[in-house]
Amino acid sequence: MRYIDIDTWDRKEYFEVYSGTDFPYINIGANIDVTNLLTFANDKVISFYLTMVFVAHRTAEAIEHFRYRIKEGRPIINEHMCPSFTYIPQGRDLFIIVTLEFVDDILEFHDRAQARITAQGTDLGLRDLFDRYDIIKYSALPWIQYTHFVRTVRKLGVDSNPKMSWGKYFRQAGRVLMPFSVQVHHGLMDGLHVGRYFEELQRSIDGLAP
Image (cartoon, rainbow, N blue to C red):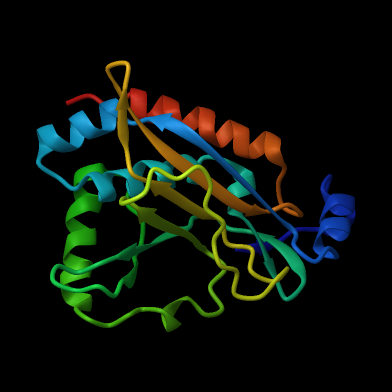
């Protein structure tokens, strides 16, 4: 992590203006095609959810703006980020939040995530996220084919960790589609960058091979 020199930063004015608004966030949702991801997960006999977390996070890691954060009112940039995702253990109605280091190998990540889930047990993991500037939060709502999903914000204007969500996938014209939403701090990025994220996310999914 390092601080960004705001005086030479090309986002200085955007950062200052949007950081002063009551709700400095943008949330964009769209359907993505997860046909290849579902096929890949089924062929490898691994979790669709954890596979989606992996692909979503790897895509974000590659885009500089998704590594920007705000710490003590100043912009910073992370070298790497950790995925932090909700998970409902079998037989329970309450979710836990699982946070772990990211590894750029889908099967290794899947095994590490499963091990972390088992080790965490019923520990909610909620307080582990306080004062973290290096995470992206992931959550799924697989019961609803929603059109939009606005996430909670711990403190308006201060919480700058991106939040990704997805809903129930569905079949249409021989493909499997799924609603996906991205919520980010507008002082750190624009709709252009979120649009690029969606494009790269789709390319990553399409590139999955059994």
